[in-house]
Image 1 (spheres, rainbow, N blue to C red):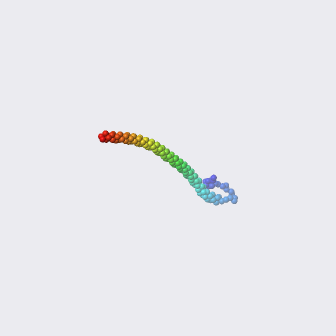
Image 2 (cartoon, rainbow, N blue to C red):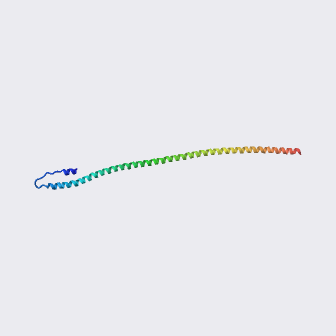
Amino acid sequence: MITPLDIENKKFSKKALNGYSTDEVDDFLDEVTVAYEKIYKEASDSKQMIEKLNNDLAKYKQMESTLQNTLLMAQSTAEDVKNVAKQQAEMIVSEAQTAAKEELLKLDAEIKLKQKELEDLQKQFDIYKAKMESLLISQLELLKDSVKDKN
């Protein structure tokens, strides 16, 4: 690429006849040099700006990728926590149901034992009642006999 310095230092061979005016060529080259220098500087600045913007873009793309990965990991972690909590809840419910069933079985056994005790006590009461009846009848017979003997 031609630089402004190349244009400024360019020398042409001079022809004696019908050649260009050296002063006009030098003035024109000076104008071209100034214009080209301005365009060259703008192009250089633009390249630097494009490079800076490309670097910034790459940095932001990296940040975006990192944020996406972080978000995916957070979602995955949240899903894992949710699943673990659900499993724990199911386990707690299952343990509570098992404990309730065991307690129910114990209560059923206790009720049956108390019913058996009640039946035994009723039998004992019936036996006691029968003995008392028998005793009272025999006492009544003795009284009757004793009253007959006095008469």
